[in-house]
Length: 95
Figure (cartoon, rainbow, N blue to C red):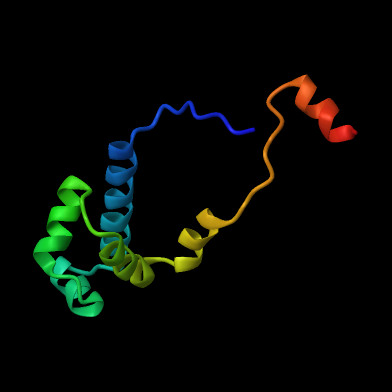
C-alpha cells in the first residue's frame, strides 16, 4: 500500500524537471536555440519552460530524448512492488 502523503507539489516537480533540462542543456554547451533546432521545440517555449516549468508533455519528451534517455521516463510507468509500511504488512507478505 502506497502512501498518498507527499511533501512535493506538482509545481515542485515541474520546476525540478525544468532545472534538469536546463542543466543538461548547459552540460552539452547548447544554447536554447541549438536545442530548439535539434528538438523542433521553439526556443521561446524552452525559455518559458526553463523559467516557469510549464510545457506540454509532448514537447518535454522531445527535449528529454535529446538530453537524456526516454527510458528514464518510461521507467516511471513500470509497476514496482510496494514497500511494507508496517509490521502487519510484512507478516501478510510472509503468508
